[in-house]
Amino acid sequence: MVLVLASAAGCGSGGPGAASCAAAIKFDERTYLGMGVGIKFHIGRRLGTAPTVTCNDTGRKSGRSEESYLAVYEINELDRADAVGVGEKENPALYVAQDGGHLPPEVSRLLKGSRN
Image (tube, rainbow, N blue to C red):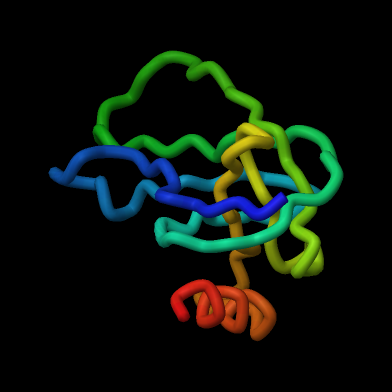
């Protein structure tokens, strides 16, 4: 099955703090960030679920926030240490392991190939 990512969800719609609040999950002791570009990839088996990383983009202190969980899938073209598919199996988003602001080479190749 080939899937195309239209966009990944993020927090906020502008305003203070919006840029600092990205779509993110914690899985397998790594933080993965959602990619917001059209990307083609093949979804593999379900790996489990992961909690979303919450952020306070409003600047207000609130009570306990509810944690949400999303399904996590392997991507056939990539090592799960580099990237995973997240969300609904029919239309998962690409999430890339946070690694000091650099994309793993395999992910860069997938992105480049997806734009041709």
